[in-house]
Image 1 (tube, one colour):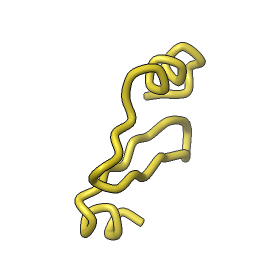
Image 2 (cartoon, one colour):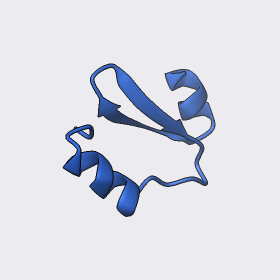
Image 3 (cartoon, helix red, strand yellow):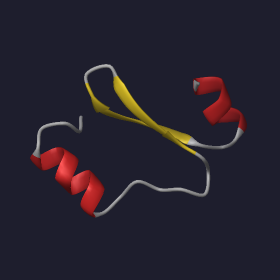
Length: 44
């Protein structure tokens, strides 16, 4: 999946132990989602 993300100019974010969110170049993970994950101890 890392190759697919790289080829599509996407990003990979670690959100928990052995759990990642992979998004295409035109999608960002920010704001409330990151805050909520951090508050629940899921975002590293």
